[in-house]
Length: 123
Image 1 (spheres, rainbow, N blue to C red):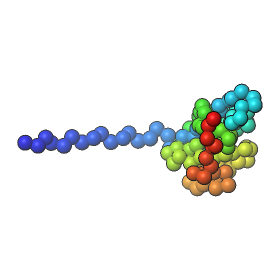
Image 2: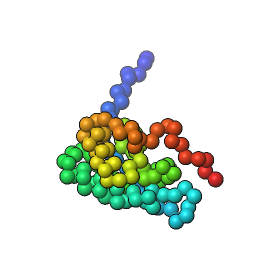
Image 3: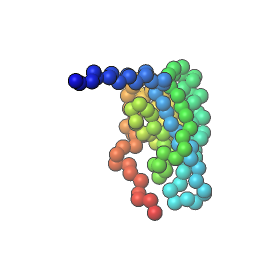
Image 4: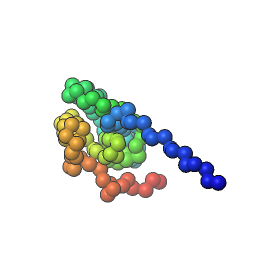
């Protein structure tokens, strides 16, 4: 006799609509790969958190992340659930990401990291 199929429970709904991870890893000065924090990611993260709140972006969480392993392109951030990577350099870049990606659901191609942006092999 066959056992009746057991239904798998459905995933719960997402807690956030979008989750932004901003790399704030800091390596020693002079490290060959550099680091996002040395390139200003902490200030950009702080700015992004404040601006997201000012814009009333509900369901959006901006978090600090440790190394995201794309140091050579830093500062970097990734937005989930889409898994889209960006390389913002200025508060204006952050504003554009917030408005275009998180408010309007679009993308900012000039700031995106793609599959072509691959760090050199680690030594």
